[in-house]
Image (cartoon, rainbow, N blue to C red; front, side, top):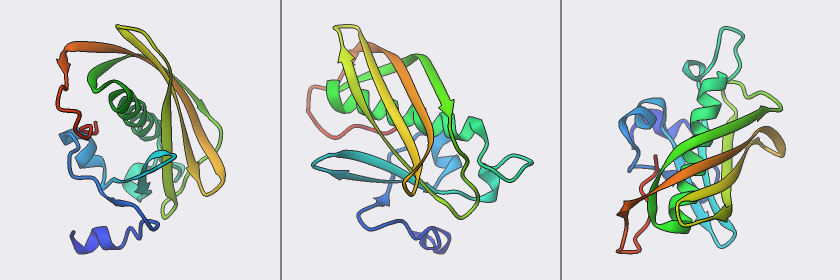
Length: 151
């Protein structure tokens, strides 16, 4: 962990995510934790995550939510999936220095399509709610039952 990562001060239980793709790695650093209740991803908002008004850019929030949704799908199905549709409701904002975290869950799964929902929070305040529909890529099904690779 570099000294800049140490300044992120993630809450207890969060550890650095190291299996992210290049786009997400570039936008991080991101953290994760897994509990009996589910999984969480988190990031310390930095000025580079923000728009000209000094609040987290909507595209950053949506990309973060998309990663949560995809992780929920993979954890539930052990299958790589592609986003078909994602709807986002922007409810509040996040500013530099805020700890932004979120979680997601599958609400329904068929043999080829999965429906899911996610929430992003700063403290107890909901910043974004998202729903998604994902296409399961059956030829990429993970048979080992290992942990998912985060997007």
